[in-house]
Image 1 (cartoon, rainbow, N blue to C red):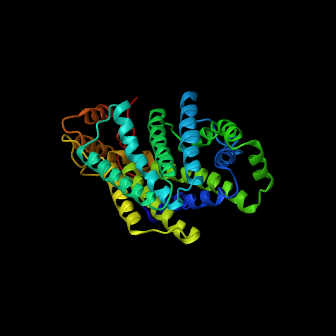
Image 2 (tube, rainbow, N blue to C red; image 1 turned 90 degrees about the vertical axis):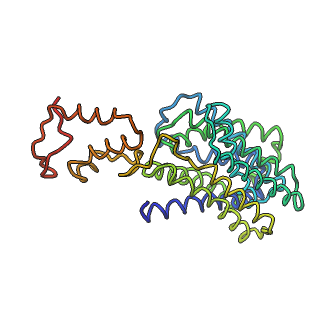
Image 3 (tube, one colour; image 1 turned 135 degrees about the vertical axis):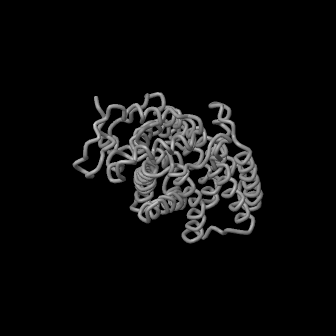
Length: 359
């Protein structure tokens, strides 16, 4: 990963970590469900008119919008409003990786490896330690709401995987249109129209700034930059940077909100982050080996292959054969593609061009 991409990955983790402190500040200005509705409204408008509709079925947009937008963020904001500290919220939400693996195993038939199961158990131990810590200093009900938010996040991850949107930013912008009306309706029913109107009338620059941060900086910039990184690097390279989110979350809550971080919380953080890290590993199966010449998911494009020289295509074929022993379909495909090929000198590279294949 080049230095600029590395810096971008750390910046996104910092933006997402500080987001919890911003939410805590915003809850001083808005009721939680109204705040969540305004977040998605600001994220969707005017961006929905600037990006194309994602190439996925409407059912996936609606499903992810309800589970992620209404359930996950509704529970998170209500839990934090009920007394769940910002830094601890950023930590506990990381258990979503465990919920994702568990739900995928139940619904998609993905069997977790022993290493992943061990990581899940360690992460659950971290949650138990965090619950003990919160039980001595705050309401356990609020803690349970944030754990529920993490479970909904895990469910939305599985739904997003099934939807397989080609563009993460477009998908998130359109998903943001779904929760607005349900959250507004829930806010009117549970928080009351008088409280909502009072919050809107008292809106100041700080309250407006929190809405813009959680909408534009966290959602539009954060997911857009994350999607950019995933398009240029394997998920196994990008995903570990999300483990920095609770580090920035707890640090910003300590610096800006004076939230204490005691020994139990540090212990919970170590267990949870370490467990999630193990649960996120994707071990190679018994029939696979490490590629000798690079990763299959870093397949070069045509321009890259031309810059690499005339043997780039054969190199990719060798990588496929090394990754999947005994599967020579890629080698046969390349061989068949070269059969009858015109391998005259390439005007761009001055050598035999492997891309010029007889029609």
